Length: 229
Image 1 (cartoon, helix red, strand yellow):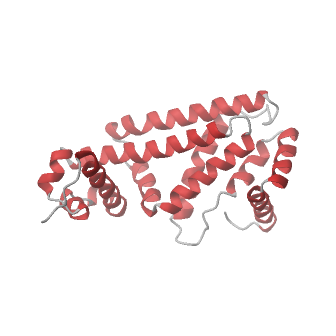
Image 2 (cartoon, helix red, strand yellow):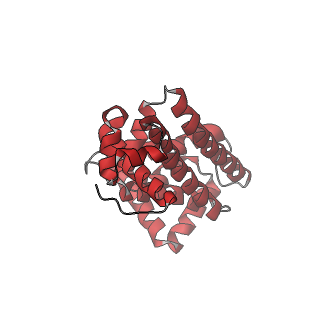
Image 3 (spheres, helix red, strand yellow):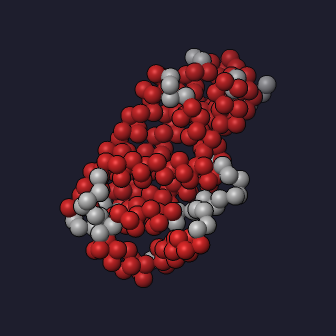
């Protein structure tokens, strides 16, 4: 096998991306280092220079995909620090873009969930989950203090709801066209949690941001027709 020379960091990244693709399509137990090496167009011997085992590769794959999700949500929340409606819509848009750009990500999400009984999987995945849920809880509490989110709701429970939305979108992505992956879920999800001031803010934003208006209108149509997602 003729392998083009790459800097070590690039080669390791290439092997990791190929491993994610193989894991997503074959499951952890169905994947082999031989298949991953073939996907990366390297020898197994070269693969083992970077990863000591298939398990080592799998754990790094979980770290990569979980970290990508967490960092994207952190950026979305930071960019709209004072505007909760925009922040949540931005989070949902990020979810949808990520799933649409990578057909393997949705599969990896469910693969990770299936392996959460394993201590090494929990050790790498759960800190990302706790980080994001904690950040969402802090933001929801702050938005409640600002009068945008209904103060009667439980911030922690609501944070879990919004965090779990990525699983709903991942499931939609895996429906193979039966359910369209769309960030308009955001508007439908957030409306019950907004205060009257928050509702007014959403209406105001709908006039200044055409994409928000389209999301709101789509959400209202779904509410009246009962059509999924």
